Image 1 (tube, helix red, strand yellow):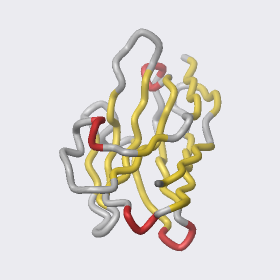
Image 2 (cartoon, rainbow, N blue to C red):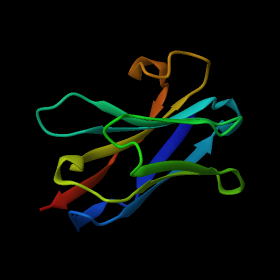
Image 3 (cartoon, rainbow, N blue to C red):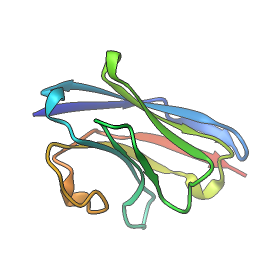
Length: 124
């Protein structure tokens, strides 16, 4: 099993930036993919960024492409989500997730382990 703890959320004005962190512990060598998801009240969960841990390849949702960057620090077992040019519509609870097998990374069911989330609020 893998444990995930997010941090770095907060409140910012539109146009600002935040960096979210996800500390990964436990059976970390089993992780194949990491992802960041978000969910706003009354809306469906949305996958915003995905990363292949082995090769570092990333994928982004169209809604965040060019503004968000997902990265990993293997030495510290941490993944990050750098969020720039934030918009009010980015307001949501952000979760990191880990997949321990090859699967459809666009499907939330691909991910075995989830963190508790960190809140991001962007005001206009």
